[in-house]
Amino acid sequence: MRRFEGRTVVVTGGNKGIGFAMAERFAAEGANLVLASVEAQVMEAAEALRAKGAQAAGVVCDVTDIAAVRALYDAAEARFGGVDVSIQNAGVITIAKVEDLTEAEWDKVMDVNTKGVFLCCQEAIRRMRKTGRGGRLINTASGQARDGFIYTPHYAASKMGVVGITQSLAKEVALDAITVNAICPGIIETEMWDYNDRVWGQMLGTYAPGELMAEWVRKIPMQRAGQGSDVAGLVAFLASEDAAYITGQTINVDGGLIMS
Ligand code: NDP
Image (cartoon, rainbow, N blue to C red; front, side, top):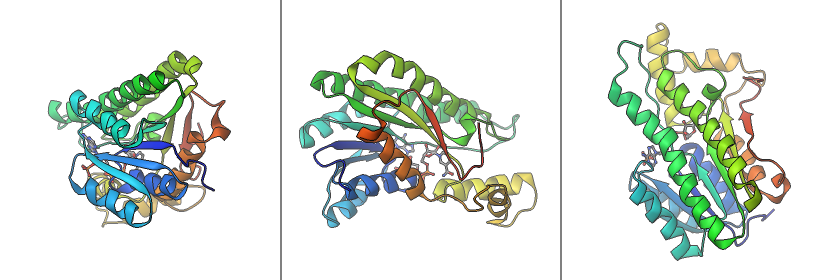
């Protein structure tokens, strides 16, 4: 299927992990891609997509910086004439006991995961309203938007905030043919999860690398960790015409780990 031929998709945190898997999926379905991340590595990620025949650009952008966010969507307009799908996927996590969690950690996680999502939604909506073509916004929340895990109150708060942003904006832009939805990945094998496995493992007991993940995976009804491609499938659906009547929703993609 090439459902996104001629459409432009912005993916923040698009240089690796879940974001790059989304980008690969949209590229395979004919979209123009604009990938954003903090590190210059995003240029190589865009090059990897171009090497497979996709139209793709990389933009270095810190999603907490409003000027950088505007420049990101300016780049999408200059290169591809606008944005049809905007995926707010950039995210960070730290893990700390309550007395050890610093104000700086709190601010960083809230800034990237919550404010960053809002700033990108704001700018994408501004552009989508201007063209009048409608559009799709998809925000990456987390299983922690359903059920806060231990030692991560700031991350849980940031991801619950993503759900609030999603619902509020969905109501505001519904008559502009713009849908806004959130997704909640469970345990997805990426660099972020490697960190989680290592640090939570140390803090929750004497887990060797991989042991905590294996224990948590046993709790997943499907008995396997997710891959970026599992998340990409949901996101491609939400961005497609088939999802035109779905907005303000938060959908788990986690092998059945959380059923609420
Ligand atoms: P990774 O750590 O592999 O990737 C995180 C991405 O976010 C990177 O591209 C990184 O860019 C980017 N990023 C971080 N800070 C900023 C910033 N200030 N501005 C722009 N980009 C930034 O994580 P995942 O792929 O695992 O996670 C992707 C999303 O999915 C996150 O929102 C995460 O919270 C969420 N999630 C992940 C789960 C998992 O199990 N892996 C589970 C639930 C949710 P750079 O490399 O340049 O720093």
